[in-house]
Length: 433
View 1 (cartoon, helix red, strand yellow):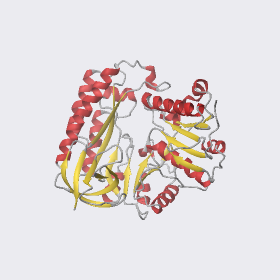
View 2: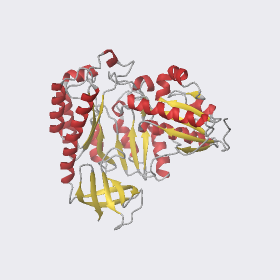
View 3: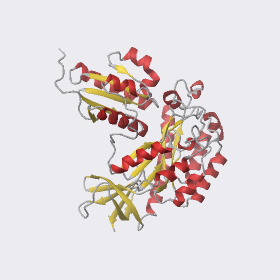
View 4: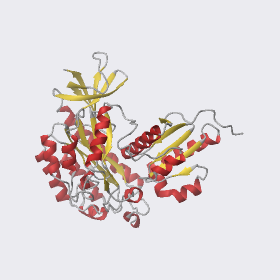
């Protein structure tokens, strides 16, 4: 027999998926706190809000498994209510209602006021930039736009997040100031597409002007750019990057592929020649820039020749950071009309081959850092090491700097100067200078 849990109304927000979802959860938690609600992030609470991801198969599977896990807890009386929000419920609400009907309520990505109401809270418009951050205290994500206007054939994000909508510069500056006041020193700028920023509200690509405004925020020491689209990249951003020491010489620019046939089918609006030129232009404009990219393996129609071309291009370009994922056949996308004809094991083999190649490139680039000194921010202590990052590394996805904790005491969130004494393929070992 189900017994009502005895815990007082504490709301547990569970976040799945990307940094954009982390940001949305933080906004939700900030609103709940402002309404006097007890709210925690991925801890115990009798009311659960699951912020789901619906991007590719693995992410959807994780979201569904998490919902089922909490429904089981509800059945057993461990939690009282379960609400589901985010991309999965935006995209599949009718199916979810049918398959998992005992969830208390489903909400889409734009239904924050309705979700708050269901949780007994009011949506407060005046809370610009008020968030309960869930990242380590020294860095935070700053979402500068929502949605995407790009026509990429493989991507379901526009279905889940709608059209591109930039946040005005003045609001982002207020948010950055509030984060700095809490001790945040690094802003990681995120959006579905940074390149497009400002076109809707300022009628021009305005990322450079936003950066000019953000570098003036006192307390912020690093500003990092994530998720820039290659087509139409505003080159004035590189000029600001070169001039302003606060802007990390780092750019995350997902390129997805390099074969002209595949790029055309993906509707990326570019070619191998243009992409190669763009990368060369980046490196000429900011000589010590670190480029991170992402590639898709096994897109419909990808031949062995396409893959070998991509592999030799990756070898030639020597990206400092690179990740890849296997193609996921997503309904209601343009590519869904194509035959998903690359077998799963071939997709995986190709992804493994690229990552093996990247591991070697990364090892070689890291060996060259031995003997050099870098400004490093300390993110955490793990085992016998303090773990930090240089300006060329983003949290969770890039290289880390390990410093022997038995020799030095360091404070998390602080910057320190570190000399690199050894290097592996994805880790650097250093000592404080």
